[in-house]
Structures are given as structure tokens and as C-alpha cells.
Length: 328
Ligand SMILES: Nc1nc2c(c(=O)[nH]1)N[C@H]1C(S)=C(S)[C@@H](COP(=O)(O)O)O[C@H]1N2
Ligand SMILES: [Mo]
Image (tube, rainbow, N blue to C red; front, top):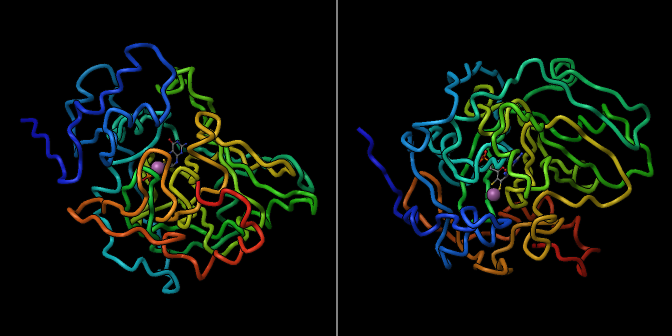
């Protein structure tokens, strides 16, 4: 029997039906959320299997392998860890769907073998196999808070390694100022790529300084196992002081450049999603307040913290950038 279990803070699905899709317009998050007024989230449901009743080729769930890594006590989530089921069945991954319950479709993404192209302003452009890369780094576990620009939040034990380690392996030239991450564009297995109004592939980037910050993390696992495809396996970026959309999933290219990249979301709506996207409760999104966040897997709505609570690690990087739109 199908039971729609809506969380207290979710809004009814019918209020956010993306009508523009039916009308054939180019959707942005602005439009996706417009029907909801200031309501919290685009339509979402917990284990809403019926949504995938037809059409989607069934793929068995990916087998997740245990990943041994010691938890690094320096990074404290500061609140209870989100139940694994919630963090892995409520996702954003537009390559699969504009909705949230895409975990079923995501199982079809082949993850093995995987390699990453290192391109642009580096000593020597090359392709690194993920296995080879993992031999050059050591894995640790970090409990980080995650804050989506849509006002939902979670707390997750990620397994991975500092992004700085990859930057060292890549050997960027001194002239490189930014690092840009690109998600795989798998036409066969990612139905969202057929929506040509989106500027595929999904890209986003950081300054080299941000990339070298100790918080910047490349994630290969969560909850003590390899990450499932819906959360960005086999390797995704995790930058907890920034809104979630900066955290590129399923990375296939790491590009070094001296030009500031324009991200997927910035191409769609530059007034709403900028380059910096640091979390700040005092700076509202053009269409909704960012003062509070809904904690996934609970009924709680809590105040959002500036830098998502990570100011001690990151705030000083922005001292000389006060004229920039740091929080959009
Ligand atoms: N390739 C890709 N990466 C992506 C997204 C996406 O749609 N495609 N969504 C982003 C957004 S908006 C968020 S909040 C996080 C969600 O990560 P999670 O599904 O692990 O919670 O992934 C980010 N990375
Ligand atoms: Mo997000």
C-alpha cells in the first residue's frame, strides 16, 4: 500500500506542481518555487515509490561497501546526525529529476570504473583513475552540517579527504585562480539531461584559496559506507559553509583557470545564485528569507548561522572581499 508520509514542514505537492513545464517554458528555481509563495520546499515525499511506478528503468540499488575511516573530532556537527534514510532519499540532483525522490532513478548510473580529468592551468593535464587517486590520500570521516539554499538542512558523517590533497596532486600553475568541478553528463542514464533548457553539464567552482581551506572536502562515502549515487557517488564536493548547490556531485573533471566560472545555477538565474553562495541568515534570497532552516528527518525549524556556523574556519578568507556579493 502506498502511504504518502509528508513531514510537518513540507508543503503539499500540488502547490508546487511545475506548471511551466507543461507550458513548455524555461524553468528556474524561481518558477519552481513560485507556486509555493514563501513555503519551504519544492514538492517532496518520503519514500514515494508510486512516483516511479512507470517509465523509469528499474535498476537494483547499488551495493554500498564499508569504508573504514576514523572520525575527525575537529569537525563537530553540533546537532544530531540526520537519519541515513532521510539523507539518502531526499536529494537534489537535476540530472535525474527536478523532484526530490530521485534515488531510484539514480541507481542506474554506472560508477565503476571512474576517472577524473585534470585540465587547464596545471603542470601536466591528465586523467586520474579514482582508485589511483584514493591511493594517494587518506580517508577520514567528518560530520558536517549541510544547508540547501531552499532552506532544508541536514547533518551527515561524510567520508573523504581534503580537497587540498587533490589540488596538490593536480599541481596547478601559480597563475591559476579558480578550480571548476564538472558532473558527469551520462545521456543514457540521466533523464534530466534531455531537458535542454538547463545549461548542462552541472558545473561550479571555488577560488584556489577556498579549495585549499581545510573544510573543503571531497566525499566518497557517508554513514561509514561508499556513498549512494543519489548523494553524488563516486566522488562529490562538500563545502559546508556554502549553500548546497556549490557541492558538485559525480565529478569527472577538475579544471584550473584564471577566469571566474559561471555555474549551472548562475547561468539559469544570476540574480539568485552567485559565485560565492556563502550561507548567511541575514541575506535573504530574492524570494524568501534565509533566516531559518528545516532539519531533515525532524519537525524542527532552527535559526540558520552565518557561514553555516563555520566562521572560525572560513570568515577571514573574505575580509578583503566585502564589496562582493558574498552571500548570494
Ligand atoms: N550534479 C549535481 N550536483 C548537485 C546538484 C545537482 O542537481 N546536480 N544539486 C545540488 C544541491 S542544490 C544540493 S542541496 C546538494 C544536495 O546533496 P544531497 O542530495 O547529498 O543532499 O547537491 C548539490 N549538487
Ligand atoms: Mo540545494
